[in-house]
Length: 80
Image (cartoon, rainbow, N blue to C red; front, side, top):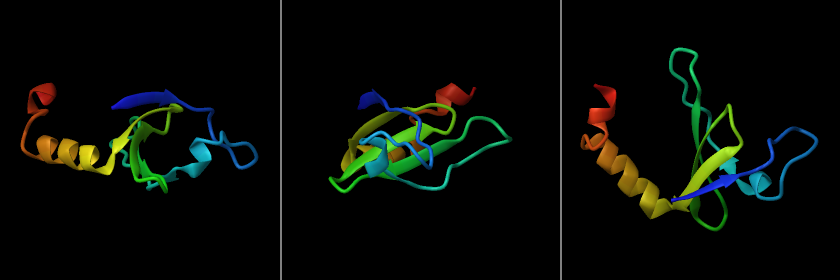
């Protein structure tokens, strides 16, 4: 996955890259940092937080594989 830093988006100024990303509603847990998923017209997937303008991007297929691996327990050791 690629990591990118874009300018924070606001109603009046958006970076050209960030303005192309259609972000889903953020997923938040207990008031902590919120994660969000997005995609663009070219078929790339994005994962970012609401606290930072940094995000990772890759193909929709790569995001699908990541989500499947997490569901299968590949990241369970991080929760112990």
